[in-house]
Image 1 (tube, rainbow, N blue to C red):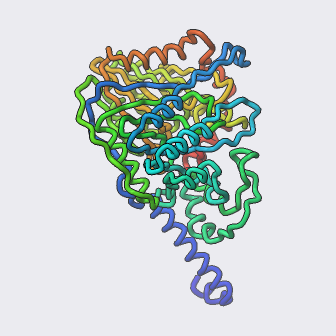
Image 2: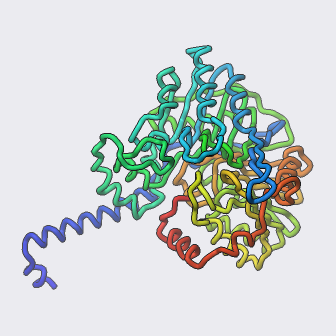
Image 3: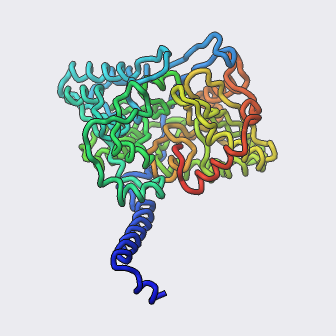
Length: 483
């Protein structure tokens, strides 16, 4: 072997040596950026706070059949947010993922992006010294390809716009991100974008370098609005093409606002933004306990609460994406020990007018039904328009109910400290108003009380194919998912 190497030309040895160095760098970069320390303040779990009231708010779009006859919308979340902004007297802090008004579909979407912008600008115009902080994701700037007209207008009027520094987060697609960090990131030529924008043909074109950044697939996926009075943690984005999605939000008051502000300040600081204000609020005495959790702490608390269930208890899940192995296993185990597990899921059939592959929910449902011997019950939301974008769960034991809701899909990217995510964890008496509202919401969808909200599991599982499961398995092994 040594003789053979010595016989190689000097040029060949240099090339092979350089390739070897690159390979070592590639492996080292993958390892480091998969396990590197998170910025301070992430993977956060605040304390449990007693509160007097927790308000559940939801958006729904529904029809009488799968063709969309008598299509109706119940949209409440952003109306609550607009009212919060109008009532604020000291500050507004916002952290929202997807924020634009581009769409390809010929649908009369609500103008949530423009309306939110107008509300914030009106607040600033009434009092130029009023502090407003808007934390968001670089997706809304095309990862550097263009300026957002809406966010640019806010900046011009004195609103503090903070773009999350995603580079500080761990890499969720290490095989690609290793190449990006070693090679691709150094070839940012800048200039005007010329590649079609995958979000919408109306959106500005992207540069190659922006697409290369986007393929790292990581995000500040949080959805929070906080004033000195209250906070809303939600699954809803101020994105016009998402304006008819099903979503759920929870509104809280009291000292938990400071936990939320502390966590949001961490994002602001590692992204080059300012410190955020705090509130003066006395601890409340009430029937509910509420905890603010982010990133992997959402998973940790969720597994703990599922683990408390016993035969005769129930779990109601309303979810856009479910794929994380830990949660899938925990729910399957719960069903196998006699817990009534019912799931309303999005069929993953469309995204802003484009057809999707059914991943990840359809192969996951196949796996869960198989491993629970059919004990888990599943219904698909009838998505005649938009998506069933809700991300909430209620775990009801004999003693009390555990509710978790917010931005977090049940996927590895959301749960394992890759994305920024946020949820409220709520412990509520079984006879409380909130549990009653959650029960009524779920039963309305499950039983199709006044519309065709949901479809039988066979509506999509009958079309489940071997290749879908194969692609899903490949994506899981090599971490090449977009969910």
